[in-house]
Structure formats: C-alpha cells, structure tokens
Image 1 (cartoon, rainbow, N blue to C red):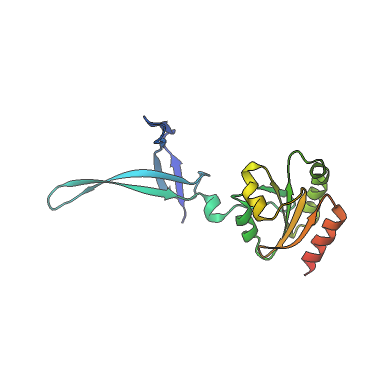
Image 2: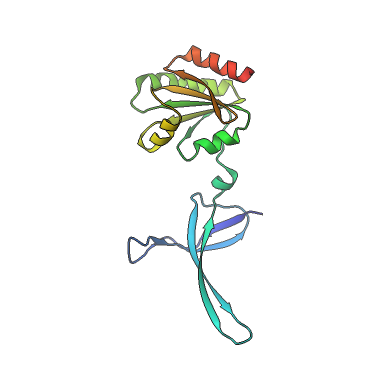
Length: 184
C-alpha cells in the first residue's frame, strides 16, 4: 500500500525568506497525488503515562512522489521530452528495449526539419522508446555527459549503453541505425 498525501493548507511564507515555506499534510493509505518530492517538518507530542510528562519532538519527513517511486513513463508511439532529471530513469526503465534520443536545440534549423520525421518513426516502431532532449543551459551537463558535439545528434541505446550515434539530420542513416540495433 502506498502513501497518499493531501495538502491541507496552502504554502505560507515564513517570517524569513531564507527559511522557506511551511506546509501541513495529512497522511493516509492510497496513492501519492503530489508530484514534487517534499520534505516537511512534523511535530509530535509524546505523553509518558507513568509520570505524566509530555515531550515535544520535531523530525524531518521525506515524502517521495509517485514519479520517483514508480518512475517516469513513456507513451508508446510518441516522442517523450526528457531533461537531466528524467533521462536516466526512463532509459533504465526501458530495460532491453532500444532507446533513441534526439538531442536538439530550439535555434537549430535541421533539428526543426527532422522533428516531424522523428515523430513518424515513433509511430512506426512501437517496440522502440523515442526521447528528445533540448540541449539548453539546464541540460548542459547531461549533453556533455552524452558527448554532444553537434546538433542534431541521435544516440541509440540498448540496456542503458550508447551503441550507435547518428549526427546531423540524416534520416536514412537514422532509420538504418535503428534497424541495425533492433535486430541485434
């Protein structure tokens, strides 16, 4: 049985902006309905039945969202946008399936030209996971980790390892590379 978190009150600004926000939650059995991971403080009052004393204790409670515990998901037949936080969990969740990553930028003309054809491939190869990564400033670390030199670049992964790469908007080369990795 999973944990269900319902926010009982809106975040209230604390007196000092450095401290952050205060949130109150109730915890019941079920599913988690909050997406971001949340750390909150809870205060417990414990009574000692022998001498009637009461102790107040504060502890930190980390609540994991369903995205973290179950992992992000992809939709078959569609290209899924990923970022530095979701890329590796999706690749690992793919297991032995072939994963094709389109590494692009918003300003790249060839990237814009090949994007609809990449979507068509996702609709054609239902046994392949198709991902796209905007290689902007936020994802710069992941792009560097994956060895990006030019956009567009297509990385083809199998069992969480890069096995093929196609640079440039070369559609036929991409199709050949996908077919080769799928058949191996």
